[in-house]
Image 1 (cartoon, rainbow, N blue to C red):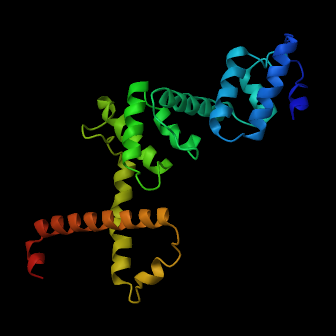
Image 2 (image 1 turned 180 degrees about the vertical axis):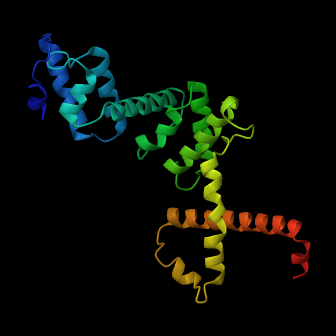
Image 3 (image 1 turned 120 degrees about the vertical axis):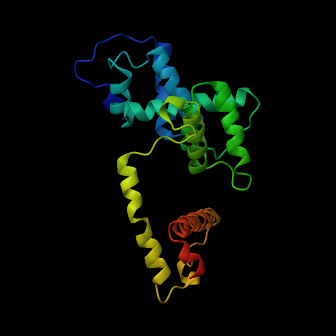
Amino acid sequence: MLQLAFAQAGAPVTPLSQQEKIRLRSLVQKIERGMSTFLEVGAALIELRSSRLYRETHSTFESFCRDTFGLARSTCDGMIRSASVAQTLKENGIELAPTTSEAVLRPVAALPSPELQRATWRLIESASPRCGPTQPVASKIARVIKNAIEPAENNGNGHKPRSREHIEREIPFLRPVTRLGSYPSFDAELVVSHLDKFIPAAGAYTMCGKLIERCQAVRQVLETKFPELADA
């Protein structure tokens, strides 16, 4: 794959020193193997980009990543940002589990400052005491924090104002509720029979709790609009 990358037609030739060529080959091999963690891959990408070790065969870092690794520039940039956040966390005494993935750190990397990233990661860890941080948990917490610090774009409670399209999507809410409530042979055991792992089971449990809360809220609104329902 490396040889193919070096064959880019029309690339400006800016010779590398022998030492740079050796380093280039080592970095490319690390990225191609994937290594043990994304931290090494991210660090290798950072060095390739900052030292412009692609310059002998490619005019841009983007074209080099595309031809050599089959990766889009956005993917490489995301890995670089996540690796940088991971390094910052480690430098500030935060130990990351060996299984921590780039996807888990990606939402944290979108926050504007290292201080906020560290505080957010602590919060993510505290919200995931059993299984460790996961991408859905990290994404949700990072999104709430990001919305909260962007008051011009939200409605004051950490949530962005809902669009008309969003509101229209809520109109059919009662359809699945009605279907579920009226299904004649509902069997809870059958519904959860395919869940054999903790994480998806925990997700289903949480969503059922949210559904209970929201259905109860709908009942309260209906009782306010139609007081006779309370005696039904």
